[in-house]
Length: 391
Length: 95
Image (cartoon, rainbow over all chains, first blue to last red; front, side):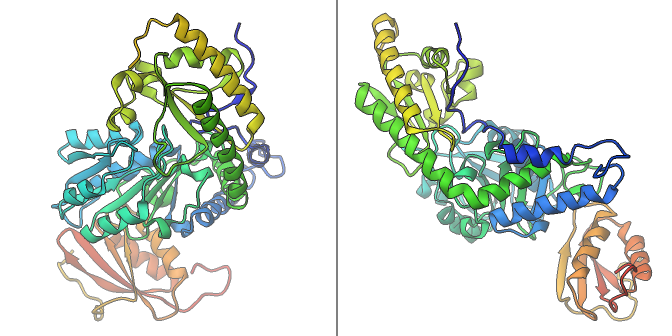
């Protein structure tokens, strides 16, 4: 019997919609042309709502409103960043190389691979055992043929942080663009684009208590992109088609809330993450905590339990009312080892059995303690039953 | 269109440059209008575009908004067009 989920620990994948965001969105959904506030009776109101949301996103990341392009989500934003930079009329035609951290999500890796098929040169930047980009290797890969470097501020599976300001100094010196997917980091860390040194930054509304269906790409003034969706004047010509006003209004509200409340969200969720990590490591033997040696988003705990399948652990957690994930679409959908963990040098067996516990602002230390107690019992039981060889 | 059509003298440089390469009209015109709002009377904006439709659209926009189209020069596929900000218009009229 699967019980109702009572404790949600999948915040790195998606976050619950904030009630204040839902309220803001509802105000934009009146479709009766005769009703007060309807977007159909007041055509300019939609534009004003979009302007307000754009200003809120700009304030959230220390950018100018004209540097914000709304998209359908973070995945589209990252596709626009990579493909848009590659397909734009080039200022320097010799720049045909795209460098991407080996631990990037599919939203980055796949467009980069597509560009590779279309004639651009695509290479992965290796990471060390902690999951941190090998700066010496990156330096050796950078030259005047590199168009763009992409790496997430916080990895979506491990929470490991990259030193973007340091990386930005390298990319700037060689004249390459720097893109980051900041979706996971958005509800934990300040995202001042000038401090980070990035030229392009992707965000997802649904990873910061906003709605699904809205995302944004920060495009530094002067960066040349080609649109992926053409045929209209929306979003400065970089993303044609009528915008989803309600979703974007909700995104703006989420950004405004995060601007004020992010520090409190971080403190709460990191305390819960630390309770999860210490509780599990102290009470369960032979657990590998991936990325523990690196600076990371401490609300996220990615681990493998030797001798136990991750899928079994996730099923047991779900039955007990805890929502967790493998953290890896490879593992979830194809039963493959996580490419992130493989890139960190983790064995395929351990990489295939990882689980990710990602705390959010609504979790408590008591919930974390209950999860640890459940996991402890489940691991003992599964290890007794398991026919899986220990890695 | 001639390689270097000149209406008056093209300036050596402009106070601001707006890169719209890769974008089709009317987006470069919309971006020009936005950028001009932040400029003062007499200031010059250089608009860079690779959509040749702008050679018709930008002079027409300038005529209808009281700004001065100064001409353009070409560099490869790129067009560099120069606009001088006209006097501010009373509320209710296009800027």
